[in-house]
Image (cartoon, rainbow, N blue to C red; front, side, top):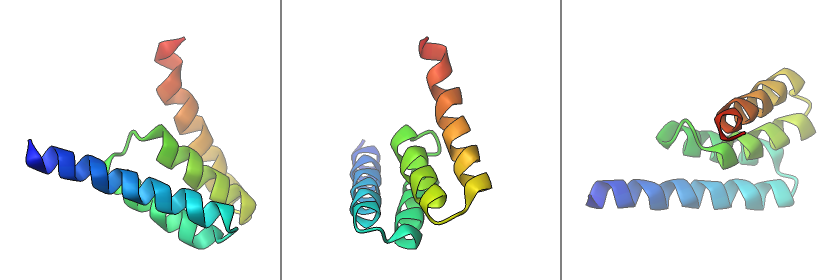
Length: 79
């Protein structure tokens, strides 16, 4: 139980870092932070979106497309 809570906090820290880096237009750092979150939670929509956004802004369009399509696939069952 403690390890699960620790993991959620760590994912949240990586997500916050990705958001901050993206706001500062530090795309490479944003990609790395979002990837770190995804390493802990591969189905994190926020991490996929933030990495996809940073990838798009840095010109990695194929990777951005893949991330955004993954977000849509995760949301599809809800609709």
